[in-house]
Image (cartoon, rainbow, N blue to C red; front, side, top):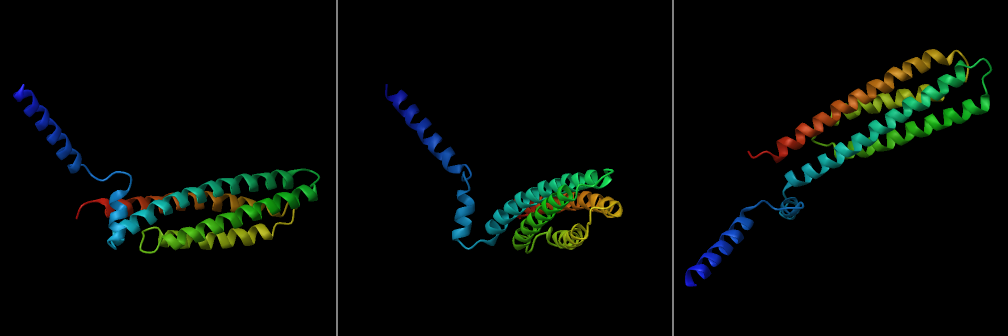
Length: 178
C-alpha cells in the first residue's frame, strides 16, 4: 500500500514538473515579453498583423481585376451604356481606395520589416492605377488602358505575395533562437 502511494505521488510530481517545462500557451510568452519591454514580441505580433493585412490587400486586388473586367465588357459592347459604365467605374475607384487604405495600414506595421520596400512599390502602383481608372471615359479608347491595368493588378498581386514572403521570413527570424 505504501509503495502504491509513493508511486502515485512520484507520478503526480513528474506530471507537474513536465507541465512546468512546457512552453507558454496562448501567447502568454509574447505577453510576458511585451511586459518586459521586449521588442521581439512586438515585432512578431506586428508581422503577423502585417501578413494578414497583405492577404486582405491581395483580396482587394482580385476584386480590382473583377471590376476592371466588368468595365472591359461594358466598353467592348456595341452600344456602351454610360450609366452602367459610370457605376462600374465608381465601383473600381472605391475598390482601389479600399486597397490604398489597407496598404497604408500595412505600411504602418512594416517598419523594420522586409516588406517595407515592397509596400512602397505597391503604393506607387496604386497611385498609377487610380489615375488610370479616373481617366477612363467609357469608349473603345479605354481598352489599351484597361489592358495595362489588368497587367498591373496581376503584378500587384505578385508583389504582395513577395511582400508576404518577406514578412514570413522576418517573423521566422524573430522566433528562432539566437
